[in-house]
Length: 91
Figure 1 (tube, rainbow, N blue to C red):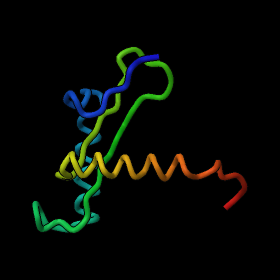
Figure 2 (tube, helix red, strand yellow):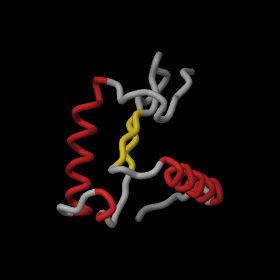
Figure 3 (cartoon, one colour):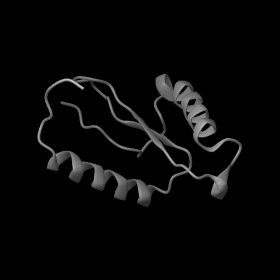
C-alpha cells in the first residue's frame, strides 16, 4: 500500500482547482467577507484517493488555520474516534 502524506507537498494538480474553489465557498459560507484574523470559523479539507493508489497521498487545504492547531485538532479527533465503539443501526 502506498504511503499517504499530509501537507508536505503542494496539492496534486488533479485536485488543485476544485479544492481551491471549495475552500473559497466554505470560507465565504462560514465567515462572510471576513478575512485573516477577522474570521470566526476555521476549516480544513482533506482529499485522498480510495484504495491502493501508486503515488496517492492526502491533499490538504485550509482557510489559514495554523498547522499546529490542526495537529491538535487531528489528535483530538483520533482520540475521539478510537474511543468510540463502532456504531450500528439507523439514524
